[in-house]
Image 1 (tube, one colour):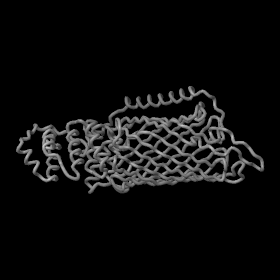
Image 2 (cartoon, rainbow, N blue to C red):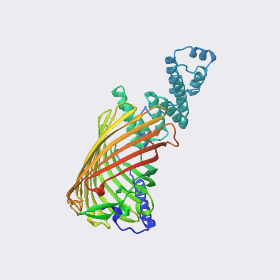
Image 3 (tube, helix red, strand yellow):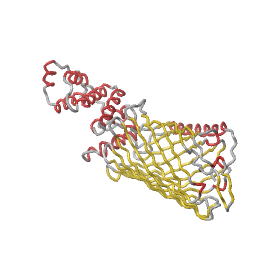
Image 4 (cartoon, rainbow, N blue to C red):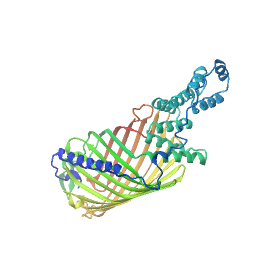
Length: 486
C-alpha cells in the first residue's frame, strides 16, 4: 500500500507549520553551536591558516611600471610563446596595467588568437580584483575550448577568491586528474583542503519546474481481473500527469575540533508539489557526523533523522546511524561508501513500521579534465510488519559527465533497481519481483549563468517491470533547474 492509500486530512497549513517549526528549531541549534565554539588549545589561531599558493597570494604590490613605445614595438616583434610568458610574468608580479598596454599594442593573431587574447584579459582583470569579469571571461574561453587546462586552473583560482567554493572544488577535482606530476597533484589537493577548511557555514537552495507523465508512479490499468472477476482500480492508484515543482534547501555547520577532526551538523528540506494537496510531499532531514579527514581518505560516523509528510498529515519518521567513507584510490579515481540503518515509524500505516538498511558504493574516475565517469552499486534490506512487504533489494548504475564546446556540458546515467519480497503478495499468490530501470540525461549551458548558477535541462525516463500488474508503470519527466557544478 502506498501513501496515497492512506486517508488524508486536507490541512496543508498544518503540515507546512510543522515543517517550518522543525526547520527553525534545527537552524537555531546550528546557530547556538557557533556561539558555543571554543578554540582548542592545540589548534593554531584561525588567522594563521592560509590558502595554498595555487589559489591565493597576498604579496605586497610593487611599484607601477611604465611601458615606453620602443618597448611596445620590441614586444610586438617577439614570438607568441615568449609574449605569453612576458604577459603572464607581468600580471603575476602585480603589473596588470603594463600587461594590458602591451596586449593592446600587439594583440595575438592567428589560429588561437581569440582565446589567447581573452585569457590574458581575464588574468589582467583577476589581478585587478575584478573577479566577476575575470570569471566571465575565463568561462567564455572554456566554452570555446574546454581542454585548455591552464584556463581551468585560473578559473578555479578566481572562483576560490570569489568564494564560489562549490564551483572551484568541481574544477579542482577535474584538474587533479590531469595533473602532469605528483607536485601538481599535491597542489590541487591542498587547494581542495583549503576550501574545505574555510567552509564553516554552508547554505544551498534549489528548485525546478518538473513536468511529468506519471508523477505518482501509478498504473495505466483501469480494470484488473482477479479470479475471473473485474475490479476497478482506484483513482489515486492510477497514473497522473502534470507540471509540478520540486525544490528544497539545506544549511550546514562545520565545527573544527582538531586539525583533521570536525563535527558536521546539517538540516534540509525537500518539497514536491503536483496537482493539489493529495500528492504534495514534504520531507525534513537532519544529520550529525563526526568526521576524520586525511589527505588520502575521510571517515565520518554519526546519525541521520527524517520526517515525512504526504498530503497534509505526517505519515512517517525515521532515525538511525550512518557511516560514510571516502578514499582517493589514485589522483584520477575516488571511492565512496555509505552504510546506513534507520528505524521507521508511521502514524497511520503502522503495518509499515520496521527498519531499512543499506550499503552503497560509488567510484568516480576523472578520465581527463573534461570527462568524468562514475559507477555505483548497492544492496539493501527493508523490514515491516508484513512478510509480503519485507524485501531484499539491489541496485547498480553507471554514467558520465563531459564538457563540450559551445559552452555545453552533457551528462547521462543509467541505473537498475531490483527487489524481491519475502512473502507472497496479495492477489498474486507468489513473491513480488520488481525491476526498475531509469535513464537520465542533462544539458548544462556553462557560459550562460547568473550569480554562479547555470541553467540545466534534465530528462528522466523510468520503467518498472513486475509480476504484479498494479506495480507496472513508466514515466517521462523533465526538470528545468540551475546548478553550481559547472
